[in-house]
Amino acid sequence: MNYIENKVIFITGASSGIGKAAAKSLLELGAKVFDFSRSRQLADEVDHPNLRSFRGDVSVEDDVRNGFMDCLQAFGTVDMLINNAGIGMVSLDLATTDLDTYEQMVNVNMRGVFLSNREALKVMKPRKHGHIITVISMAGQRTNPNAPLYCASKFGARGLSSGLADQAIKLGIKVTDVNPGPTDSDYWGDRQVPREKFLKVEDVARVIVFVLNQPEEVVIREINFDNMKFLA
Image (tube, rainbow, N blue to C red; front, side, top):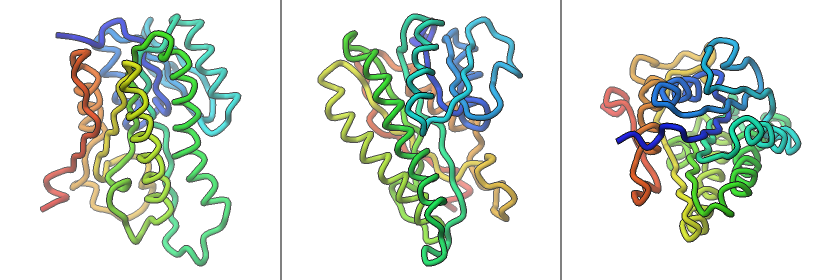
């Protein structure tokens, strides 16, 4: 069964990486995809009648509000939200990490999730229907001495999502955390890391599609996964 066809799916950060791969897969399954991205837009690359794009920053309240309004004007509703936008910056030594780095990490990875969830819930609660996915990370479950701020922001996002799940299930709204291990994406920049052992963005996209394409009564609260080569 295809439970995604004709569903309106709002994706933050769909212009690259995991979000882009997920958007393409969802369009192929007949979904209506709304791409909310800060930089380049998916619609500049993909020509599809069920795709709309909006340039905005998930950490800016007015941008998020206007993005959801634009989605409602284009498609009439929001059935599913994928919180995918995120950033990660090098913060090895907290003693020398500047406040701007901290604020950027928290604003995108936590504040952005809160703002997007809030707007989605305004649409989903009256209908008593919807599904919110947050792409967090295994860094939201296990700390990493090389990225303490990134882990902190992801732990916070996971706490927010878990608390929302407890509230939302009573309203008929499903909430799922998708926690991939290291993924070969733009996140790493020019850092020397073993990308050949990492998940591919398409791997993560397949997991997202799997979670969304479940029957209405099936609830997946959290899904964790890694590349076998990374764990070996």
